[in-house]
Image (cartoon, rainbow, N blue to C red; front, side, top):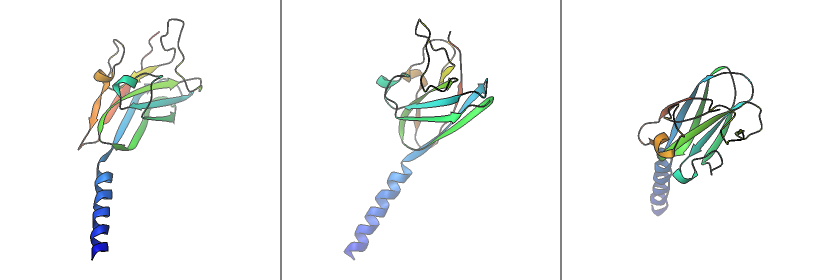
Length: 141
């Protein structure tokens, strides 16, 4: 009887941990070429929200003209922000010009075309519903 009770507790705990995760669906709109790849950077720390910051999860998808989709799965509930770049030359970094602006198209969740994206402006929450994020790439230089 004691073993059955312990087993029930363990299964319940595993179920709760599994339920406390979500999926983030991301659509990058209007990628201009099939060249390179699209890099998706998921952040959970506002102090790290930068192309060179510590990324919670980093994924890649083959570039294609039009929309590129990616799903972050099994993500713990919480607050996140996404930064995306179209790595046209496949070197796995955001190339910058002499002023420090990106030479390749970049975007962030909930970011407009004006100003530098911040975690506060780009953040969203995973709770009971799984978010669907649309990101528009922009050229800064």
